[in-house]
Every structure is written in structure tokens, then in C-alpha cells.
Length: 293
Ligand SMILES: NC(=O)c1ccc[n+]([C@@H]2O[C@H](COP(=O)([O-])OP(=O)(O)OC[C@H]3O[C@@H](n4cnc5c(N)ncnc54)[C@H](OP(=O)(O)O)[C@@H]3O)[C@@H](O)[C@H]2O)c1
Image (cartoon, rainbow, N blue to C red; front, side, top):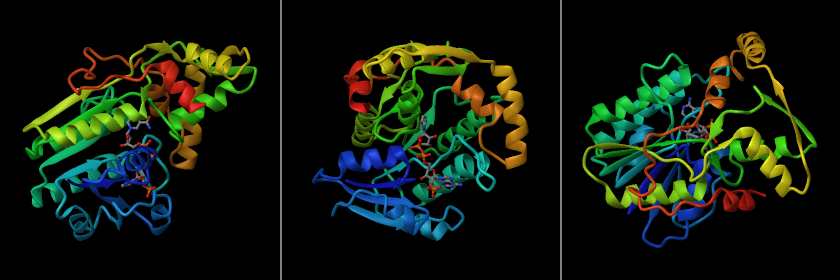
């Protein structure tokens, strides 16, 4: 099987490539936007880097040509001065979908987020919802995996967890009472491989979360305890933080915005976890945290 991966240098991408690099029957085109990103990719005779410019249809089509499956990972939560949700989450997805359609790709896989909704008032959730819509409207055979915070080597969520739990005191947004369903990155890799192998017709949305619901404050306490110490947890008022974020992000043209704060502090809830449908035996939170530490 030939798989084309976009955003291959993302944390999810590097974990996925590392997982499948040694599989004999898989060839991977790893799409990135720069030469410096190529250097971050795992080295393997199965992995073939390709430079993609999402505004240059030719470069995208060249990377996707001959692929059975596209795994679209390019996307952002934190906007920068020059990288906005519209460009990174919506337009890049539409361009990748168009190239996949032109080259008759058998299956398209997209990593979305719990809460994605094209009508959301939150700009991040809306952009992920619009990306999903572009895929649904294409009539490609597709799997959309809506995921929560992902935990694995170098994931943003994993690094933040370890750093926040390291000192003996931590201040969390609103005291950290929001509920999380952390998903082990290895389980996401297994879900992607499962979707690639099944290639069911139509577009299916899976909401895939980890096996255990836990508040962020309890998660921090658990990680601190696994690091061998107790932690005292205080609260940062969410309203004040959002006001500050509004001010600083408008000056900087991106970064930590009120929308990002709303994403981080939302409860990660699903009506039905897709783990069984995807044939997964989810990793326990305890095991995920041990691997992380
Ligand atoms: N990490 C999580 O907990 C989590 C949770 C839910 C969903 N997801 C989704 O999973 C995917 C990978 O996440 P990640 O955390 O591994 O990402 P990441 O490490 O932050 O990497 C972001 C990727 O998006 C690319 N990108 C940035 N701006 C772009 C633009 N304007 N056009 C095209 N590509 C652009 C980056 O390329 P450059 O390096 O060239 O900038 C990079 O490859 C994303 O779609 C994300 O929304 C992640």
C-alpha cells in the first residue's frame, strides 16, 4: 500500500511514520513544507519526503499521485501572524482533497477534533468543521477521526502535562476542573492503519477518545505523583486570562487567544467512543503516562 501523509513533520506525523516505517508492505510519501522539516522525519527506505506548497496544485498532486490512501495531518490550533485557521485548517484541506480526488485516491483520512462544527462560534472548532465538510462534499471514501488531547512522545499535550506537573505548585485555568479523555498516540496510529486497510465507501466520522475521563487537575496530580512528589493546585481565573489573551494576541497577531482557551478548557465528551468499531484495545491512561514519563 502507498500512503501519502501531509503535515508529516507534525508531532502526530512523526509518531505515525515511526510506527509504520518498518512495515514491509507500506511505502510512504511524507509531505512537508520545507527542507528543514525533511530533516525531522524518521529515516527509512520506505519513507520518501516530498515538498508540498498548498497553493501550488502541482506540488500537491505530485506528492499524492500513485497513493492509495492520503493521511491529512496538516493543521494548527495556535494561529501565528502569518498562519491562520482558514489557510492551515480549511484551505489546506480543500487543496489536499482536490488533489486526492483528481488522482483517484482510494481512501482519505483526516485527523479532526472533538467539538469540530462548521457552525461553531469558536473559530478553531469552526475551521475543523469546515475542513470536515470539504471532505464530506467531495464524495471521497473517507474516515474523519475526531480526537481529544493526544499523549505521546513530543506531543504538545504530553510536554505541557509533564512541565506543568514538575514543580510543587501549579496554577491551572479555572482550577483545571474540565474533563479530558486523553488518547494514546499509539492508539491513534492503530486507528489510522485500521481505516487505511478497511477503506470503507462513503465518509464516516469516528469520535475516538481515551478509555478514562479525568479532570485536568487530577491528571496533573497523577503525573506529579508518578514523578514522585505532591503538587498544590491553584486557579487562574478564566475570564481574566481570556481578556489578557485577547489583548496580547491582537498585538502579536496570533498565539494564545480566547478561542484557544475555550478549546483547552472544554469538556472532552463523546456520545459513543469509536474504539470498538475501529477494532482497538485502548491503552490505559496509567500505561500512557508511564510511557510518557
Ligand atoms: N496534538 C493534539 O493533541 C491534537 C488533537 C486533536 C487534533 N489534532 C490534529 O492532528 C493534526 C496534527 O497535530 P499536531 O499537534 O501533531 O500538529 P503540529 O505538530 O502542531 O504540526 C502542525 C503541522 O501543520 C502544518 N502547517 C502549519 N501551518 C500550515 C499551513 N498554513 N498550511 C499547511 N500546513 C500547515 C505544519 O507545517 P510546518 O511545520 O511547515 O509549519 C505541521 O506539519 C492537526 O490537524 C491537529 O489539528 C491534534
